Amino acid sequence: MKKIIFNSILAAAIVSGTALLSCNGGQSSSDGGDTKATMLSGNTDNLEIQTQESSPASNGSVSVQSAPESSAQPNVQAGMDGDVYRYGSHTYQVKGDFKTDKITTSDFNEVTFSNIPSDYTEFEKVYKEYLGKHINGTAAMMVMAMEMYGRDKSVGERCIRLINTPNNVSSVMNILKDRYGNYTSDGYSQRYIAAALIDGAVRTNSYAPTEPYTIKCQGSPNGIKQMTMPKYGTVYYMYVIGGGWDTHQRQCEIVMFEDDEATGLYKMNNCPSFYTQCQQIKGEWKGLK
Image 1 (cartoon, rainbow, N blue to C red):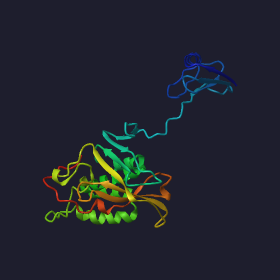
Image 2: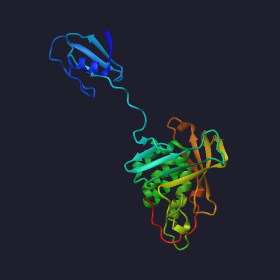
Image 3: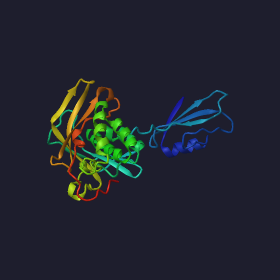
Image 4: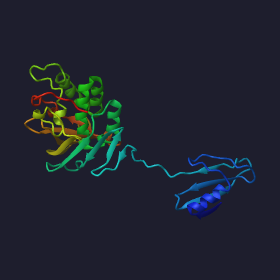
């Protein structure tokens, strides 16, 4: 076997004189004569051509070997304040995150998004490919799941089950079934409760959040703890800052079970302050995008 290193222009000229190459790595046959198998490897600045005599039965095909594609998710693009995940026209962005070895009350970060996911398919992809791999991103998705439950109980329940531990699913569903009920006279039914967790939404502006929507997060003094029941894992304590309550710090617990370390996905383990009755609305709630 002979190996000769050419620059990209010279290599292309030599190959074109002996065979027709397909840009996508396809094959073509020569018209006759000596049959040779030719492989191109490397980049255009350092192209290596290997020529090897083949058996008479060879069809003289040419194989082009391309560089491996990047393993990065195609929907994630670099942004000024962190990667931006795009799903159609919707964008999601994590701006900072909590450290996995220490969390303090001086830790602040946020998650911004243009829209609530349109359906379960979008919600699942955003969770598995991007936000679910962040502690604060998982907390933000809980807010989205609550809002989706208000829009469609069946879809919302699937979203809640996807990102919550089994024990927390029961707690969340028991309250939300009533929170999104029809009890309007005493204020217990609060269709806008998820919006109350988004930055800029307060009672006096009818829970109209600032756009793009932002979930502001802060570390909790409870920090990080190891858990052994119901199985081994690490619990991260944090706050979502919501303007719909006198106490803006709405604590939650995000967990990474050892079983989930391979996927890198966090789950919501406890968040009763997310759906505790918020302040009565003033005016008419306009909904979320």
